[in-house]
Image (cartoon, rainbow, N blue to C red; front, side, top):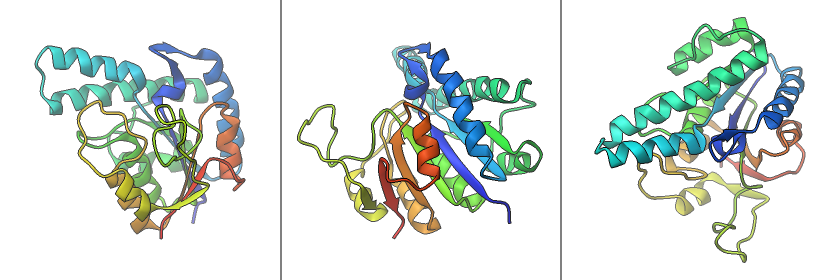
Length: 229
């Protein structure tokens, strides 16, 4: 059985607002090259970031429904994934996977595959969890713009505390509630349900510097470790 890992790169980590952080992308490539050296397969799921959210806002002003807005966000995330694919491999991607089956089928040939969202009403973090389950990944690393999972939003509540370890079932209670197109949430109920049923350990870490991703894949105590049980 191939050793595999899945990494979710939040769009907010790649961009400063709507401007791509080119220096960060260069550092990210180095980190992914190192990570790929330890695994047979590496899948990288990329979020849409602020640009996707801007498109959603513009579409909502034009009266588009959530299904249409979700599809627009998926296209933006796929473009982000295409950029990282081309930079990492040095060639234009043959296509960005639009389903779990396509992503899994491309892994043996490419070893490192990039993708964005897949379908409406499903976050890219959920995509990462489903893909990790599909390939029986050893680890899922969620690289985001905070350094772990907190008891409350640390940007609004300075008294919030960061969990070093927490059960997925406990987080399901914290992150319960509906999702709307373009809504930004660190973790959603579907992601946590997939983690709980799959038995895969997940790590939520600060995506900057990208070296944090390598550290989490090595099992270092960094960010928040999410226990499936």
